Image (cartoon, rainbow, N blue to C red; front, side, top):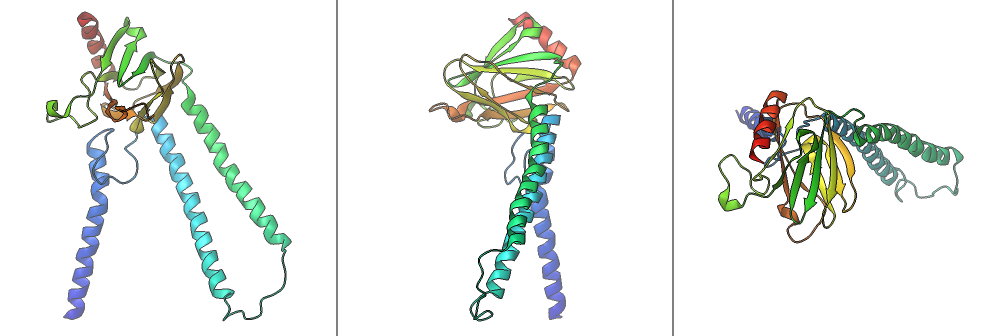
Length: 268
């Protein structure tokens, strides 16, 4: 009887633990490009850039986990094998050519295994050779300005929605009064600059993080996989209201984007 109760308790504990760990992953799939309470891992990738970044991150995680486990096992072996009780008379030597070659060669091989995909990823994230459209982003203290050169110069400023004005479908410190609208399945060139101090245009779920430097245009790009709402923030400490510079992007179909652009032109 006691054994059965223990087994039932362990089973219930296991089920609850699995449910607890699964909840963040389930919640992450219900919203696109937004952080969730108790979320584990990174936001769901919404672009090829983010997908490649996640793959690289996972590769590094395996490598560093293997290194950490090896060092832990090595420390345990040294403590057990060479303590005073197990080894009262230590051997007198100071060099081992084979070990020195191994601990020099292995880190070099690990770094090569990291640097090759790293350079490939940097090249991929840098820019798109054939952009379908361009978005110009300008950072101000403390809001963002956007311009669509290919859509007859549509431009607007985007400010944080104050907490007391949020609607039920908006997010605190992330929603804006004028969200950016972009089409999916489109190579979008993004030019980023600033009008006053350093800012940083960052969208975690889209794999974007580009410095906004006054007097200079930095270039990046994005191709959004599916419609949804994606959130980001300025990630450069730019002053007292740095925490109130959100970025909100609405990804829509190409047809809906054309309809939005037409309406935006009429309202200018």
